[in-house]
Image 1: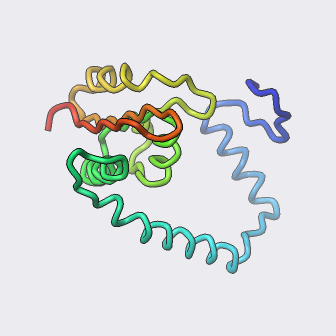
Image 2 (image 1 turned 180 degrees about the horizontal axis):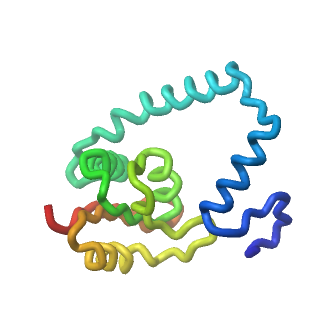
Amino acid sequence: MDSNVAIVAPLVGDIGSCVSALTAGMAKGWTPPPAEWTGAVSARKEANIAKMAPKLMSNASPMNFHGALGALRRVVQERPDALLVNEGANTLDLARGIIDMHQPRKRLDVGTWGVMGIGRATAPSASRAWRWRRSAATTCRCASWCSTTTASTRGRT
């Protein structure tokens, strides 16, 4: 495993065998979390969504960071087969929480220990490789704050 931190329960294998092993283990005495806790998490989620809604609906010119995320969120909702390529510390964190993916293998990002800078090449490559589908891309270059945001859609309709 690629980590200098001890991994208590590593999962190694293809997704099917790992999920099968997890669900089999859960069937043996799995206790669902308390309804009070899941209700508190749900309430917090709804409050965060309500707080972010005005920012995500921003139609400022030039487009700002949250407006770009909102536009991409709408694109992915309307076109669930769209590929989403995102990069940049803030963009990765926020896009994962704001933009819901409706189909598997449609979000391309650098992951936890990824290499920053691949987004600009990945977006046109994804568009070319899947040219019969739509590709939505967002890139955010970050220093201490987000300096530029680009949103685009590519591909055939």
